[in-house]
Length: 76
Image (cartoon, rainbow, N blue to C red; front, side):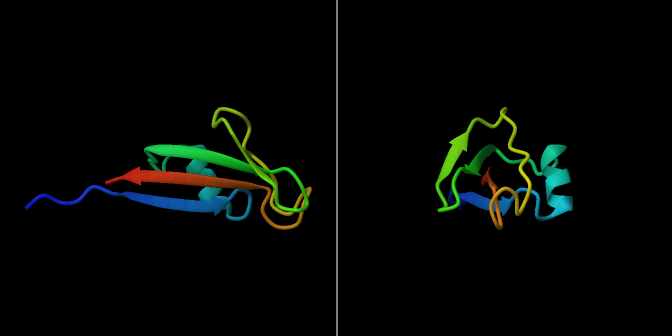
């Protein structure tokens, strides 16, 4: 019996959890795909930036709550 293909999608705010940030920075999360969204306005406008750009944003600055969101995918 073959198993179905699928993906696990994981999201977390950059700068909120120090351990997750460390694991992500050291590439220990083993995502098959990674994306970074950055918050560009107080009214929650988000833009995707290339992963090789600096996605290291502070939580709570310059806007309340998340300012960067990591999206990781793991193919099954």
